[in-house]
Length: 271
Image (cartoon, rainbow, N blue to C red; front, side, top):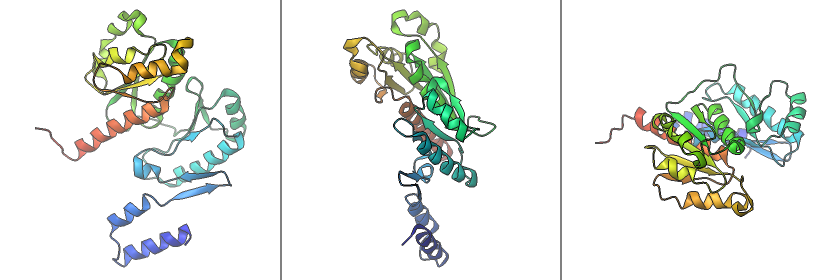
């Protein structure tokens, strides 16, 4: 049975009272994907299932492949007006790749520091409650930190940035304690030995997501040293994502805020 035939059968079953609307919605959550040539299958229903749309991983793909995927995703994001976030986004896009993509997609926006390109609506404003504050240990960590910041903003979250406040000059962090106290979720990005996440978690009263980066001398083993430091943090409440994974940290932070939104909207009260 093809997808159109399966969809028609499902809708007819709902109309006949054989399947409830709730059961049909559950089926649709795992229903819809669209082939792109012979190299990709776009998961259009990822937003319905997880709250966030599929995002294109740019590294390793050709320019033509990225452009084709973007255009297919654009067609669906425009037609599905009920979608809360119409952004189409690709990560790990190097400047030379973007230059080629722009020739094919003139309205594609590029965030150079984050290596992200995206199709964005004219007005991009926060759509969820809460603030994600992102802290970087050093300037060399900014590409990963900006990947997290731009991802969160494109996904509809309010973001605050605090850069270059690593433990080698801890007074820089302590003089910005308000950033910690005002945050609802904190993302801490650090290379070298990665100690900043533990320090922040010892001062903050909200979830802390630690992102180890591959920045550091040889004994940091391309980010393995900060990863192990963050995993072994003596401060409670620290979650750790993979090395250089600013994107994953932003999505996790977003899921935390979305869960809080759902609990608030459901009238949940904790005694």
